Image (cartoon, rainbow, N blue to C red; front, side, top):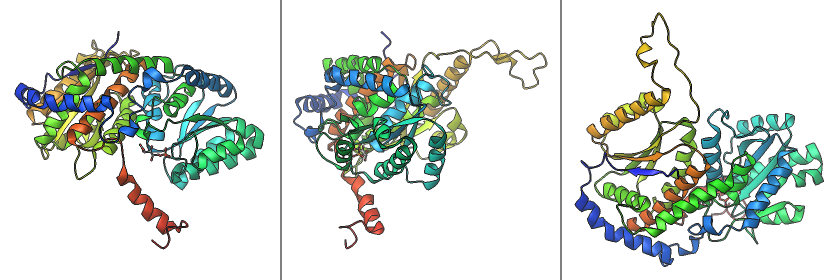
Length: 439
Ligand code: PA5
């Protein structure tokens, strides 16, 4: 079994075993609270059993929709924002690569995104693409009322109806939303769209293993059974073991809280594989929205190395000592690329010629970890055996479980997000939305 490994070998000079021991009781209590469902935000714990309990008919329905739509769409537009967007993009980009060249099978449509921005130029560009390509759409919103995806859907729906006629347009739209309420729910019922439900008890940032993430991921040609299997296997690890040393999610939750209490207020999730960039974006939302409240919480930040070693590397090495680093390390690449021998060696890198790029990348990683530790930055490391659906399923569940435990150790409700309403109220007032203008 290809299992992700949590590695603390570079942490010993920053955290001693007694500190870990003394936090263990709190961490185990947090885990018990999470599993008993008697803590803050307990109405939103539907993600805990999700990988084991997702109904087979939902997964089969998704596969049938993929077959139906992939045959007539070259492009698949995924409309959503925040938790209704980031998980799908994280998995798809990790699997297909930054340039899309690692895609499983080109008979599947190219996934593009909308509803995650209000940029007019972005929509101009998108509509230009949709003018010339056959496409289908998933519109995703749990509340069904979020402004950004609502605006995007209105634009795309009008274009789709003009291009294919109303009936065929409706057959090319899948709506993923609440079972009973919200504007999107009502539109979908009225227009007869294919619909999937986001369970009431699963919050947006924990919804990647529902149709919110599964439909776009399957549409991009990836294996959602393997993704769910990875999550199921990691769930067993997270739930079965009460040993903070052995349970990676408990260990991660414990260590980040120990470091936070020692003044390490920023966590940088770093990778050496650019295709993991959106995994970091998803992780930032998961931890930022879950923990950043009541004046508390580790600030989640992310960097892509070695690229960012040539920009933020200076700050990490010598700037204010307020951060720790969690490295996502990938053991094996999917493909090999040879470094050619050059007789003249004008660039002086013939000494690298017998090495693989991965060997060079791994040495860059180790060199970076050692330098950052020397510079006073504690480093945690998560080793992925490779990047595939099964490994990503494990990683997702690992981060989700650790997040729930960590939030409870911090003493907040990890499952609400009251702060995201503030900008909306101002925006609605400024735009003159009925009911807001006078506020
Ligand atoms: O995690 C969350 O709850 C948020 O990021 C939401 O997913 C985001 O605001 C989009 O909300 P909705 O799915 O209701 O459109």
